Image (cartoon, rainbow, N blue to C red; front, side, top):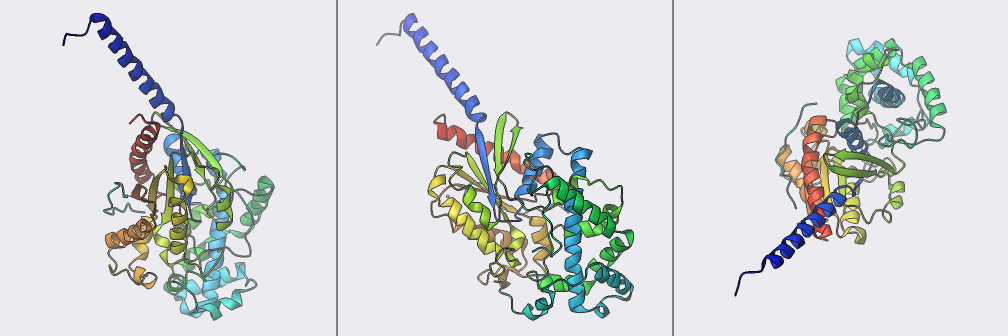
Length: 419
């Protein structure tokens, strides 16, 4: 056979250039159209991930933006302090160290008994309990309650991307809460909270009965910083913002660039009543990031206090990964709150709630067991990319999302037929 003519060669070269150009254009187009659905049960860390995206990929939180979180943080502190007061009533001030008893009296005076508190003691023993960086050896590779004082507040203006929570009349209600807080969170009360939170008898009761004496994961952090928070000139730090907790009840979209990859991230409310809002809306998403808190194995739902949170998270994961809406979607699994898990595991055995687990207090074995439990729900045999995360640690999330970026891009190009 003869060599192709120069004309044929030029034609083939032109065709090759056209194909390369089309691939490049398609690649750029798909890079700009990546949508991520952020799912998980309540308090799994989804809203913290969104805040981290603002810190890492946007301009972060300036002083004015951080100041908007003051109300939420005050509320977090007061709700948690109310739980401490109930715990003190249960154990009795006499069980506290001598130097903490006067502080306990001040705390009890600030948080009088609420309706229903007298029922707590009767429920004890009748429950159905079924920041250092932490490294756990799970390779990121594919696998086939609040007090009667609660008010509806937001972490910022309603509807602003990347800010969790919504409320009726947020500005007015936030101002009301803020005014009340300045009247309550005095230096003397802050001192009382600081000392009572460290009393061994109170810590033990809260650890042993998490359903009755629920404290948010960041309660210890805020208690240790209570004097700074009680200062009238207090402006939250970036870490304070990351640890602030406000219930998400809306679908919030956050847009940002991750290198040359444009991301539309949709944070969906984690409470049971919110889930019906998203299942039919997001069929075209590129990837799902599913958050679960490793540390929730001994906790119960706020909405249904006889349901174990970890089992609820497994149920939600099963409904997502086997859904007909997401058969072509990559699933990225965040095993979050590894730092809280590490502190909790030696004190509260995982085997108490999952009897088949036999790894004791070994952090690696416990994390891998929970990963295995999630993978057992993957009947659709989708590819799952697991990562152990600490959502409040910016360095950790920055590293994790470097890997997530590659996963998202590869799957977007694969779905488009480019790869």
